[in-house]
Image (tube, rainbow, N blue to C red):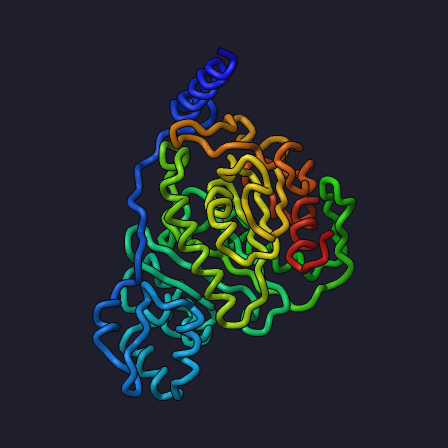
Length: 367
């Protein structure tokens, strides 16, 4: 009887979550963009130096890296010119080649909303114009960085709005830039539950940060944001993306996962080689505890006092809701101080405790 009562309470909370009285509002249902990039059929019909080209859908990133290592520069350039959308999104392909391929691919769309992404000083690591568009951009020298971080954002992010004017430090690019700047800003302190204090004591070597909108995000905070359908599709893409980083020799990344992005990270956790996984402004990670994520990464969590996400019930019922609060003691994540964070998107504001702690994590100096 007691178990039945708990089930009914959970069901009621889930209905409340979807109904909108707990902070969720209406949003348009989105079709997840999955599978290999546009142009794959033409790519597979070609060859390079008499060799078949690796299948973007099935070839492991390490196999892709080995394939390109066996090509001379002329063959690489020919593939870039003939198949820019494939090369630009092919995990394991050389980074400079992907940057150049995506400049070509962006320009080829002829769409004004994407034009700024083709600027010669941009390092666009992925670009897919399907649907609302997906994009990933590198800040710093990813080829030679000692530390790499990846920003995984939540709802309302896509390639079409990526460069739209928005408040600094809040969108994926703003978060990435703020984090990279903070990694050279001196000493930061983070408190970890049961692990004492984490302190950054220096520049921590070169740091690169990737703003990754590599999945179809929810629009608004309606049913798409309340269930895990888009997150599951995103988790598969995030796992492949991190495997691609590994294939080109990048260090194990720190994943900074905001809002619905933390659901993506939670589902991807066991399939990545991330060194750290940071959930902030999180509705849950589809796991009851940090240990249930089944990853060797250190799990961190932050939530500011005025973040509306605190009003979302931490339940999961019939696929709706994302489960336990990552900032709860029972979850077992290391806590990131966030007492001075304002709202749902203020975690990367300069001078905040959270940004200082994030920088310590990004530099590998947090304990």
